[in-house]
View (cartoon, one colour):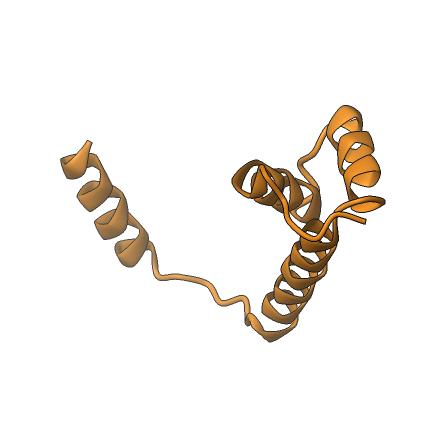
Length: 80
């Protein structure tokens, strides 16, 4: 079992894709292989999954007023 990850940033991106349900089958297979040998990636995966679960449970969905949506969109467009 590796105790240091030489490609931590890439692994984090892949883990986030998987946790968000956006990963391809190939990415899932790569991560599965990696998790069998890399302790830092295992820990990162569990942390990301826990954070996602907490946010999902704690977030309350509310409707935004149409005026607020339009204001935000117009401000985004002015920065583009």
